[in-house]
Length: 96
Image (cartoon, rainbow, N blue to C red; front, side, top):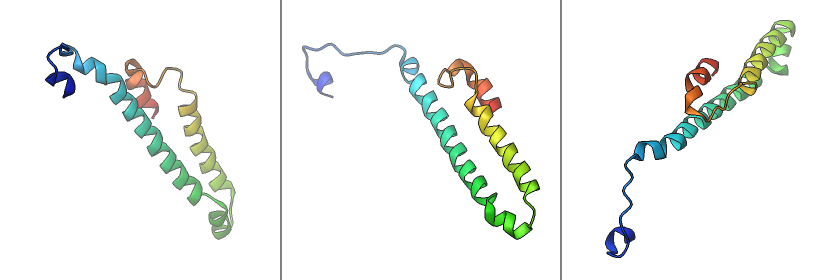
């Protein structure tokens, strides 16, 4: 507003406002994905812990499921492209 009110300073008109904010918006989406992943993983590991093994009396099926969950983590960790690059968003969604 100060820039707008001062006559001596020319107004900054951005012809491509969308381009300026695309990257930060995309980064926000990716960070929200990471947050969701962390919450879900925390819940999985809380459920698939020693208490469940004690109740069921069998740890092999639970360990197998835990390994599958860890494999999903590895997919996110080893994503080959820059997750913050919007060009790879479709690939990221498929992996996520």
